[in-house]
Image (cartoon, one colour):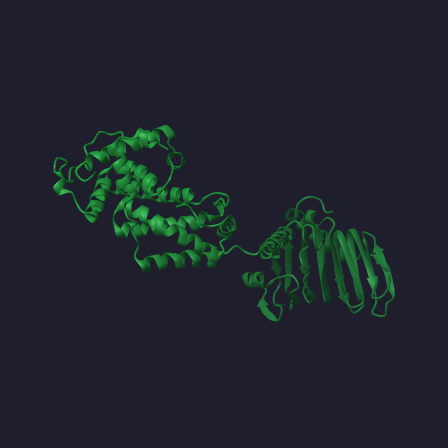
Length: 261
Length: 189
């Protein structure tokens, strides 16, 4: 602050003249409009209650985690044969790959009619073939950390599968009418036919449990059948089954990359 | 006149409580508008700038310090809004901002200093003449005089607001007073 005695008389007179200037009043309607906006903006922008903010952050976090956890989605790898593939009740020509691609999803009910065959892949994790004449429910894709056990059903026909590096530690349960196969990294086929529920193992580890019975390990190169009545038998792979699984394993090797877990 | 709001009310302003905001508005609006209107002396511009000041206050209100008188903070926002307005206007019109350090002659549209006492003006005319003289000052000088003598800020607060040293503010303030004294010689005393 400059003391008054430092100023000249003229400067003090100027100060006085400025200080005596009247306050200029705003137009009342303008003043009211600014006040309303100032208050109204506050109402619109009021900070969220802490609990709502915390809940939102939690939801965003969980959603982000689920997104990160999600494995590669199913996509159509190849189709073969002729006929219709029915997915969730919609019949699609096996040659209409784009349409099939749109409809394939975890939990979809798939029926392969005629000689049509549908091969699916979840990159790095699993190649799954729904063979002609099969009726199956597609499994979910295993998550990276959570939801590592997935489930498929096979009412009729044959599912062939090969697991890849991203499968490590995941499990696939294939529920058939007479038995449940549990796959933990392998090349396998699950077959439902007149003789019962069967699993064929080229390599890796698979167990087969009769409905209400104990699980039995099926060794590589073996097949195990559980008849509808519950009787089980263990035998060597049939040559045709071995050949089909070998071919699938070779085809899938380049696609899935690395060694199978 | 400093803020009449209590610390608790200012905390309510920070929390954007509508009633606290309204009290804050009532305490600040007239000073802001009055100051802006004196600085730009054009009603439409003053309204635009005042509106902008309150918009900026609202955006930044969480930074308000409830321990302190809010007027210097509000005045700083007011100054920034006016400064931005002048910069934009200067850019639009190819003008430059005139400093008090410049020696450009002030326009001589005011009464002749040599006129006698009989020509002294009544109060209303006197206010108008003082306002005219203020508008003859470069913007920087107008800011220093009006924020100090009309807005009630100390030189230290103006120094913090404008980013100048305290000594520079004092020196330029005195220079502005001297020029106003010269311009207003005919109507003073």
